[in-house]
Length: 304
Image (cartoon, rainbow, N blue to C red):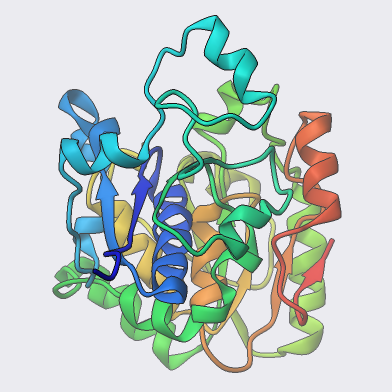
């Protein structure tokens, strides 16, 4: 009897991370001809509001506990089994089907080469994992339903202009600056000047989770600006951020932050686009070194 293959992705963290994890598992399942399911156990209880894939035009099939147990390592592993795993010996505690993705932005070749059922656990923020199904993702990662009347007003302006999405992420990053770099305004000013040289009629649509601070910082800018304010709490935890995400995606060009929340709209946008991305994403040296070796950029993007 032919084996029924299955790929299960453990989905965790915020919206941009969920997209990386879904895209990686989807691509692997398509490559090996497997059924694709999700482990959503991370979002049980209080974290349920942070699960955002349900707002997209995706087929979401949740893996059963039995299916997860079949492919996932059993935890915690007794010490003796941890030792045996070093010699390549498999057990219910260390299964070949459980791919605990390697560090940072290094390519884990098991994700690219494995042809059997798998349980994927990790951040999965590596282009090679899913770039070959980009056309599929551009169809799948679309918003279910329609924009609110408030968002529609911004959408019309975005579609009628030489729109540039400019994303400034602060908020949570200010508390996590031991790990993430909080970008200074010099990056945005350089990107703005280069964008204006390329696009004389550029109109900048500003997205941020700290909009009041940003309005003050950009008050001296003389370019055409529109601050996108949908009155959500700025915590990337409701539905307002989904609308902001897809408004960004409707823009024609991009100045992104060191954030998957603006990286994905720039990546998914088809056709010609000018994209500026920061070279430094992390204050954590080991993560930044990993990112520098395998950065999240497409060929025509400009790093500053």
